[in-house]
Length: 456
Ligand code: ADP
Image 1: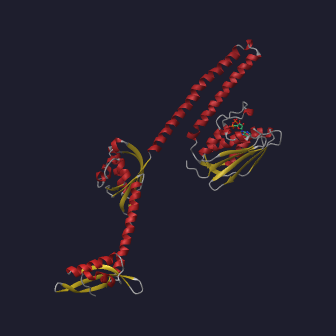
Image 2 (image 1 turned 180 degrees about the vertical axis):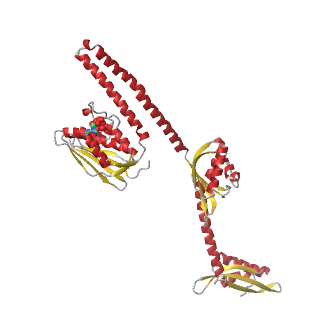
Image 3 (image 1 turned 90 degrees about the vertical axis):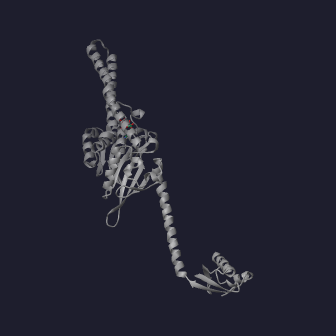
């Protein structure tokens, strides 16, 4: 192949028609012209178009030959380098993919809300994400390459540093470590984190890296503290209620009775009746205080979960109420009830309250009926205490579960309005629900669920 002087540039373009018209062709033509003008050899990669239209990567090389300061010929070759180009392309693709993965990983690593990093098994920090670094108001070079326990976050106290050092030692032997710890941020700020040390092992089960990870849990810690304080306050309040409030009641009771005894001769029936009402009121108030105390203490003592044989438990309750059931001519139907996981005291109170209500609110103008049954759902038991008693109007279906709520018409001495509130609390301690289906004059169905597996 040969070409001649600048004047022939258009022809050179035509001559290179078999080369793909891309930036490589432009480059080759430029080099070619340079060779013609200045006698410089050229070498560049171009794609040839084959007869069938397919493309082939080649290395185009050429050396100009000059005579009398004029280029008379160029010796050029095109060497097939397709395989090499394919390899380069594959490598480039793999590198790009890797870079993309690295970019994504870095994005997640740095934008993660929690603090995260990498440690060598001897506790040297090799990476820390932006969240962790900016929390401490640092630059990467302040911490990278340092022993982790000497980094700012842990310098909150010597004990915290020592604890971390020991835990890294354990993690470097393959143990997963998790604990709550307070760390130091910027300008003396502190926060509590749930901190993990996760060892990474190779195929030989040797730890080659440890991932330290911290989740911000200050809000949870604060709420927990507040809850503990509230609980303490509540139990103090309960004690005050039971001891201090009952004392004046005892005095009213005592002195009323004294008046009754000492002045009985001079009191008329009306006065005696007033004294009776006063004493009775004081007694009822005292009972309500006791019940309130029981209600408020429910959470503390009812944490033990054991196997409860509800069938025999319900039989026992029915036996205890046998006399009342007979007096009211109530027919009781009961299916076989299951063994469940629960707090035995709580479950007993629950059935007792619901069964006694079904007895208490029976409609004696018809044949009274109580049905006790249970169905099994995949994750919970659903019990039902059904009666054909006086029923409850829909607007009271929620309210009856409130503390001291009684439906007006039935506000007699025998009721305190706390039974169903206690039931609701017991059921919620068992991670279940309680509800009623009822209508006035049509009886009531009280349903409650108890989870089959309860994490105490
Ligand atoms: P108490 O029975 O001591 O009043 P509860 O909390 O057990 O307190 O019940 C609240 C109210 O719900 C009762 O006063 C009563 O009006 C209504 N109630 C409860 N169970 C039934 C029932 N099985 N049938 C009709 N009404 C009921």
